[in-house]
Length: 300
Image 1 (tube, rainbow, N blue to C red):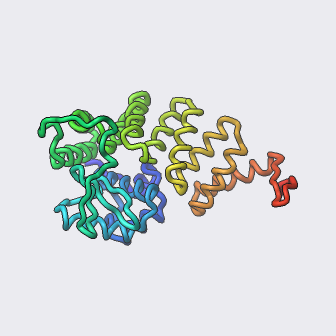
Image 2: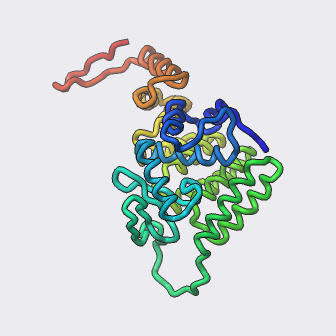
């Protein structure tokens, strides 16, 4: 069984150490020096929730505990799709939106396809339990490099049953990305952005693969979409700044270096962002407009 060190987890998932500590303190994940692949999957889900919802670790824990009681799930963060509802989480479960704290259920219109209604046989839609079971088994198979091909096949089987299952599209895309099969990864990430256009991570991952393909203008558009969906998405600001710099657009890069420093002020990435911002301000003849409309040279 492959194990990943704490630093490996932080590096692979681009985690902030303070977020990892907060999740541990809230009991969302046990503190380990080494993690299984399944644990990495849970950390990835927590990272996405942190970026997309800005809900506190304590509130996430309360929602997870309630969902375990209501639905009998072992791990709702892996077995269901979490969405923000007010100050806590609800979970998409079998075409139903479940608020586990109030135990209220509603039809999930957000997951309904945008096409005319038609009659279908009852068996056309696979049981939710089957989809959840396939997904969890695929995540577990990813844990061992020897069984990654089996995970790939399982993700394909799951997507044949439910083509709109965004987490499977993302996970399958990431497998291809890690194997440097960038064209396949791009296709899967793009599909994830189509089936869930509010999924900031899908746009972020799409930007990363377009960056690898040296399609910088398209990568920039993907990162811009990610920060438009989640303005506090620090990693997307960081990559967007890099993207602008590589295209020689230093002033645009400056805005996102400064945004990253504001959102994540501690650590080596913040130090690099500050250095880049300082270099741009020192090298460019930047001007700012005062409240009275007068141009003023920025301090060097």
